[in-house]
Image 1 (cartoon, rainbow, N blue to C red):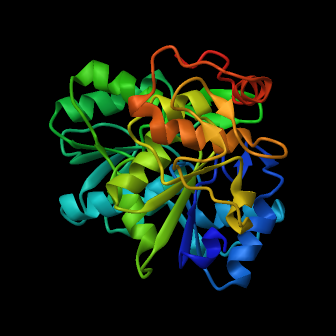
Image 2 (cartoon, rainbow, N blue to C red; image 1 turned 120 degrees about the vertical axis):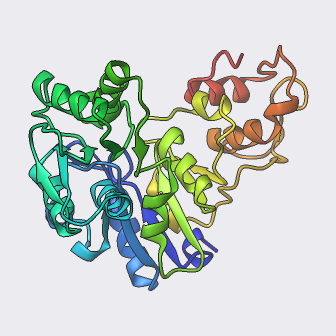
Length: 323
């Protein structure tokens, strides 16, 4: 049985999970189609607040991903919901971000503005490639004047086909430094976005590439998670965190696999002393990673490879030196 047999919904992250920049992950289209074919609810849950759901849907379809606009959940929508809950209808909200974010604020009955004035009651900050010193300074003025500050997300970086670029969290950090204030975060790793995406389902599975947002967000929402290694987080990151998912795999194609993806001890890999391969056939480095994660809290400090198979598997994982 695959994970698609165990869950009634899959909450897919986008950047680093379904695509990297303008490049689709090779196994993504088949994985999403398989979920649809098995009548598993599909949601595309993104911390990126720069685009409207229909724009995200268009991009996914252009990439060959079967997606409906209604399946897209963004941190802009989650931030607008938080603003609606906290602010009076009709209030002026300073938007630092794209017009798509401003539209979400307008959709919940608030008035988006682009410059500070004394009656601004909120600041909503999301990613935009056009944000600069002037925009951030307007936010600082409003927050210092008492406006409620909501950040769509706090991702420090944005994964693209060129590498890691500046994310919304890096610009949030600049405003934090200038105001000595902390925002309400609507997107992952906080729970509002995940809970909204999972609404109407009974046993959802979150799939993402970032431990600090996707996996932590799933844990905060009480949802099982699968970490894929196609984006930001690495095997070493997984070993060094306490925010571990239930499952780990190379990419989203593993959703249709019958392999055991759960982080648990594996009899083919001995990690109680030096790492040794005890199985038959070709060793699976990811099975070793899962075993190492399961045993990490009681592993010896001088853990090392005991045979060539273990040395190769560690090298493939980028873990030549574990400690």
